[in-house]
Length: 53
Image (cartoon, rainbow, N blue to C red; front, side):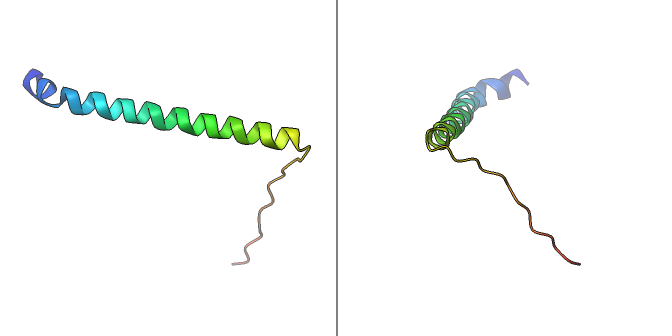
């Protein structure tokens, strides 16, 4: 178990760094979009479509 952790520690470190970057980028883009819509005085209301089966 310890040998496998030593072997893949660098890969796990890089993978966790990439995951953190992706989450941070997603949150930044969401907050940027929210401020754009807030400044434009636009309210977005999601509307679904009714699917007839």
